[in-house]
Image 1 (cartoon, one colour):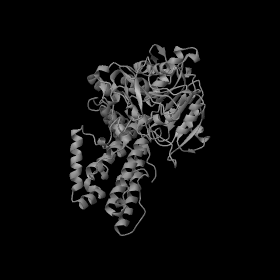
Image 2 (cartoon, helix red, strand yellow):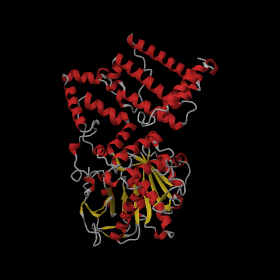
Image 3 (spheres, helix red, strand yellow):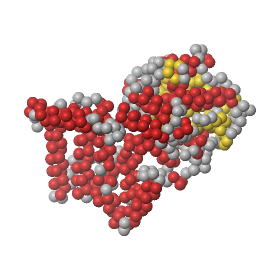
Length: 581
């Protein structure tokens, strides 16, 4: 088909679409709290301004539909043509052979996939519209497309129909019970059997003790398992978006237990789950009353001038901010209380923050601020829903189908249990974090932020860094985490782990190896250029990291029991704050 020239489309049509889009884009925030209409208004205006491209896109859809219709007719006539369109390799919704074996369901699947792929591609390729708005419009379209998938309805899901026939409807009765139970518990479809886990019993079981507590955090020191330990202790700062025990799930998956077994004195911050009483807690408070206090307590308990600090996710963003603050506070590098540090899946440059970018706009942040103004915090369940939407097929609709249509109770899975053990975010801290980091991207800019009296310049950081990104991370994309390498004034060793934001980090050594990693010095070049020069290594990056730590964490000294005269044991690990709901 020849391309349609722009002059063939009436100007009145283009003007009408533009006027409609302008009205839609001005919807009241209460009707459109996430700015969805604004994104679609820009998309509509983009296509209205390029009618020839729109006509050609529709022409391509017509050709694909014609090819699919011929395929369906051939199947109906008893032939066995190859599918006209196939599901993506990672799309598990249509994996059951029933979707291909029955002609009607095969046709339904292919029509759905054709329209789904076409609409998302055309939204993403809208001419004349900023990339961020195109990605946002595509995201919200994907939510609707995922919701209306034929897999989610009993009468258009062949596997659900077969289970109903074979069980005499028992699957639907069981699914109804699960649905009613979810309604009683807040309405979210459950991903995990919560009755299978208890924190302190079969989660977070590494022996240790709380050795310091304030209004913001508890500091846990873990009991040694070796007769000697390295002189420089490790202080781990997990994200306060979730509870700390992702680092201490069980004996096989515990990063904490592994580090203790390698001869390190390990401290971990356990953040308090804030209530409305902590509404005015600031980001700087997390740095000063949380991270800095934890580092100072660990130094005093161990009798050492400096520690190795580890930050994970937003805990790493906070640690990077604190490192810049400390290098401003102490002009002499030897006085900085952190000798070297590690970042795990940490963003300091928020220009391309990954899938969460769809929620980073003025409308969404203003809506969240209104919610937080009323209750003093952001409810962790609201944040959990947002993160589940980023992977709605696997984190929402998979469980909707298996729980309610198939009647299968959710499985016991420790990582998913931790993921549902949500925390709240104080109003002041979270508003600052969203605006100054995500929306305005100030952390990467020299002296654009002032925290606890000091302008923040990441370029002033002089302490060696070991940074870890994850290949499939959609929360902190590895190419964005790599930007730290060209930002600080210190040597950076960068490691790229296979898998995602959680499983790429909770990655214990096993035989045979399940995962792999790439490692090498990073000098601020592009991430693709760096990766091209690295060798893929089968196994866990934990083993490489502990070698790096051993070279820097000093000589062996006698093992240290938790606490000291000045910091007596307050409670057994995992402490009190981790149990707060």
